[in-house]
Length: 137
Image 1 (cartoon, rainbow, N blue to C red):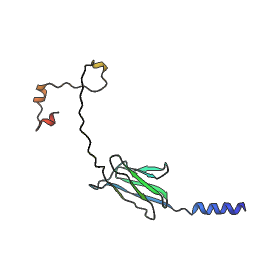
Image 2 (cartoon, rainbow, N blue to C red; image 1 turned 135 degrees about the vertical axis):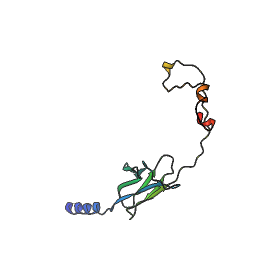
Image 3 (spheres, rainbow, N blue to C red; image 1 turned 180 degrees about the vertical axis):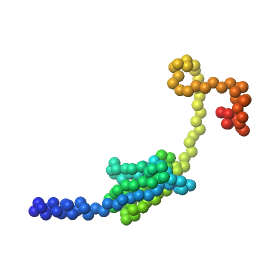
Image 4 (cartoon, helix red, strand yellow; image 1 turned 120 degrees about the vertical axis):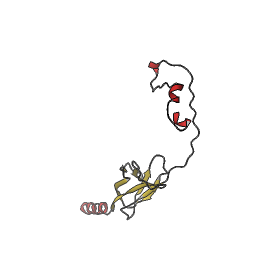
């Protein structure tokens, strides 16, 4: 009886279809490959990232959902069925950022400042060859 159960379990464990999925993830606007896109199996910690050419490879069970996420882009979920090649295009998140204004008041000693400091006077700005004022800033 135990032997029959073990054989049945063994058969069931090998009945799952493992798919070797690969593909390219690209920007939907211009078709350029996206490097560093996270390709994860939904509900698990299994994941991979695309290389510099936007290519990824991952082994999954047939019917598993793959989630493609990348900063600044809308995520996309695809179910892995019989296709071994799944090419994806991600669309950028269209979102307007509000204007940022940086204001600083006060004095500090140079040794207490942790950032970079640059002093530019008017004469130095005048000597820089640019086509508009924005480039001087």
